[in-house]
Length: 504
Image (cartoon, rainbow, N blue to C red; front, side):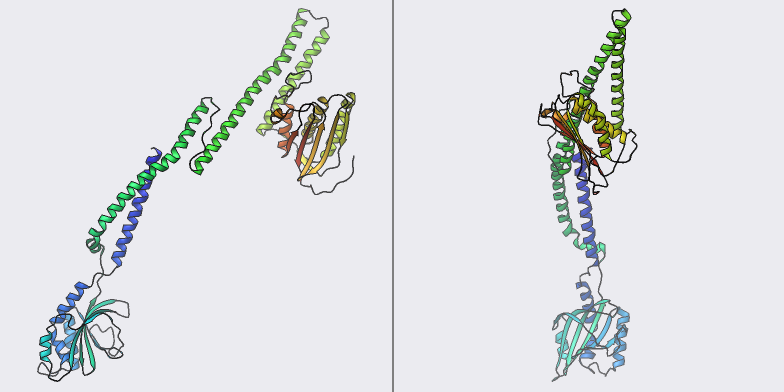
């Protein structure tokens, strides 16, 4: 499945879920919302209109031909409530409203009673006020008012009521007809608001779909195009084209992938070139001694040599050179693979430097080289003494080897940046600036002509691997040809704060 299709489907799923959550939340809100009270009010008004007898008794006692007692009135109201299912209450509305009667007996007689009045208009229920006025005795001050509203029981149950209030001689008596406030079911909510909500919901869904398609196309292009470039470039690299570079564009994550790909192709190109150089160099370095061995051995076989011992000596030296090359290649491979075993102990690098200086001073004297070693005692380091001796021997012997007669070679130890340093400097043939970055590569040699002083080209590569295996670094500086060079080996030490003085 293509990227833009997956993005489109994911956007549609998110949009559908969001709309579903909104619809469910809206339905829950509508369901929790009280139902419209109009139908309840109409039902209560109908009960009030057919129950005028009680109203008349309240408005004018004795009007029906006999005086009703309070108990008889309450019994009639109670009977009406039982027959109709409508709750009746009688409230005296003075400064502090008091409940006189409750057919449900939730409130006790004489209890304070609080009403929430929504409307209070004279004869808003269209009762026969003309008849009511005719029933009033001449000269009596009596007025009928109607109202609607709500109240709550002590347990929180809401009720809707229609009230008929009679004012007689500064006394207000309210006869209330009440029903529980109705709730609204999901079906009723859908029936009431479905037609109103369906249109906006469908419009929102359609607009969301259009936006989802647009965003899917834009985002997929933003992400997919750089990835397609990387895919094409990766296929080209797999086919042997290591010059591939992709544009660093797109979102940050894609740019990171592009940068990593470009770095990878550069490293692959470098490794490929190093491998090609390795094959060329090793074939050359193997061919030369093999040619000598073959030539001298053939001369011995043919009896064409005047000095068989000298020919055998040449064969022996070339074979030894081949053996050293094989050993160095094997050691380098083990070092790079991390399979090279080292015996790590605490040691003073200055002692190794002093021993090497003493051993190679004879070689320097033969070439009339000014050779000086400053091996001050250093803080202990952890390392393999034999391997570090191999490193320093290679550096010092190279310095002597490539320094002309009457030149200078200096070896010095010092504490530096959390470790110890060994600095080997000379006034020899130097290193061209263009060769400095590759000086530690396998088989790389500065003396292109491969004169009599050439080596295997593996010494510095092995030196760097050994130093790095000890957690250290090696660097080289040179001002150019015939300007000498300086090699610096740094090795970490846990005792760099140790104060040492004196010279050996």
